[in-house]
Amino acid sequence: MKIYDDAAGAARAAAAPRWRHALPQLADKPFLSDGGLETTLIFHDGLELPHFASVTMLDRPGGREILEAYYRRYLEIARAHGVGFVLDSVTWRASPDWGAKLGYDRATLADLNRAAVAMLHPLRQEFETEATPVVVGGCVGPRGDGYVAGAAMSVAEAEAYGRFQAELFAEAGADMVAAMTMTNAAEAAGYARAAAAAGLPSCISFTLETDARLPSGESLGEAIGFVERESDGAPAYYMVNCAHPTHFAAMIDAAVEAGEPWLARLRGVRANASTRSHAELDSSTDLDAGDPDTLGRDYAALRARHRRFTILGGCCGTDDRHVAAIARTCLAA
Image 1 (tube, rainbow, N blue to C red):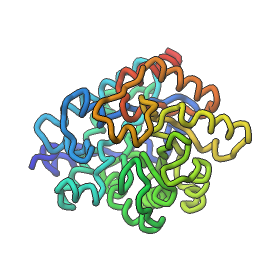
Image 2 (image 1 turned 60 degrees about the vertical axis):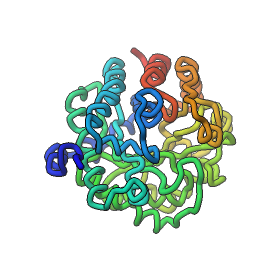
Image 3 (image 1 turned 90 degrees about the horizontal axis):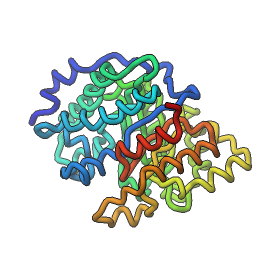
Image 4 (image 1 turned 30 degrees about the horizontal axis):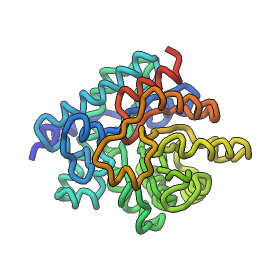
């Protein structure tokens, strides 16, 4: 098995964190992130990803080069617009349970997590400028399905489970932990605690259904409030991902009208290209990429509702065309 040349090579490629103690995306300047990595690899590049796990790309010939080319497309958009970029690792499904399903033992899985973060440091060095700070994030995903809440862990159980990846990310020089597609508040709170215990700030990003609620049934405000209480306010900020703007725009309007305090903690969006529900997406054999320009306008409308939406990227079905459209619509050239 060849993982990023070898484990020693991954360790050599690791670098000291640059932004861990002062995340630049907490200012009011816009940042971009990438789009739907897994859907791009599967539907556009024609690759197979067992269990939707992009980390397996580091375990196949030429995989690292494909990932680097993917990231470069987005980094070039950020640099062209003179804005920052949040560069997240390919480790959304590299936690212990998913690693076991993929056939990796714990040591190999640890090497993959370290290698996934290590490969981002040279990309940062290549693209970062004063106008385009690049933040390296170690990405974690739900222990179970990203569309279904399933059997929820307690906060303590989630903290223990999340420590595996958080500690590896800290060792590999990540600036932060990005917990994406969180389906319930207890798991999110545990991951926020795990990141803090490893000395890392975190972003908690919730997935929402077409009714603007988490798959667990919790409202976004309830989930953010729970995480704040259970983690002593550990997350640096919160986001929404894996939902279309039309699914939650009315909820944001209502929260703005009511002056909900949790809105101040909500900083970013990584939306799906499709307006389909999660159940419809899960059963689809085709890619609904929507219209990039329409999605860009949807983002502009969201930012008009809530100006603190400053971290902008994509999720399922989006690619660099969508992020370029978002940049054109929302950012000054």
